[in-house]
Length: 96
Image (cartoon, rainbow, N blue to C red; front, top):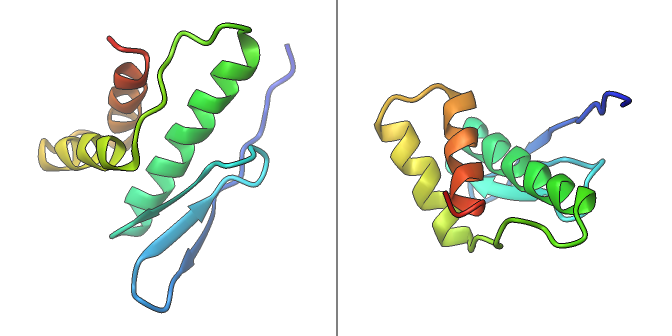
């Protein structure tokens, strides 16, 4: 299995929000109050999308932006490391 490299491009919008995009995965972009939130959200979306490409019947459900932001905020408030926040978001998407 070949390793996949993902790039996260981050820009600041005129209104102050951060926007992150993973160009290798269609639709994997997200906004956040901080660079980290935007990047984590975009990566979580990319991971879920890539999981779906591997399965004809993906084992996950689509999360709304509100659900995604809620999971990210819970992780941030709990002081969880970024990797743990992404894991929590994926677990929610997988319904676990």
